[in-house]
Image 1: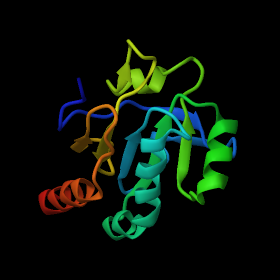
Image 2 (image 1 turned 90 degrees about the vertical axis):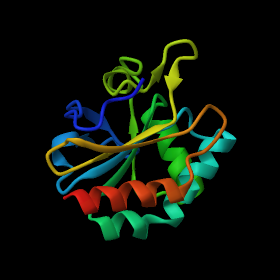
Image 3 (image 1 turned 30 degrees about the horizontal axis):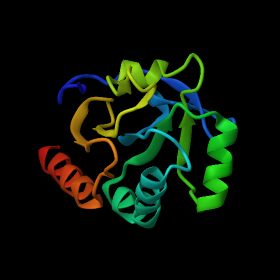
Length: 154
């Protein structure tokens, strides 16, 4: 299940790969919150690399890009360094998956995040969602469509 379009996204406070605190309320102007299973897995590495290579898409839309997994912040730091990732990778490590659950993005059977992303406006309202099944990355074109539909609606 996913949050409904029009719902207010849950507030959160998580540490990024540098140990800095990131709050949903600090994502002024809107955000794309990307939930992903695990750093260093093949599909996640490819998918986050696509996001890294297309940061201009998010910058042009005026939104922050953050990615959330149940990995520890030290794992996320190593992953960011190994893959030249500059956007925030947020650790929902402990209590395990609390924020991911609040976003209806936690796979209770496997213990990690589903592949779902939420496009939030500046007020934290969900304006679009992008998802894909296990083992398949979300195409960057889906993000472009979601961002353009949100821009058209605002």
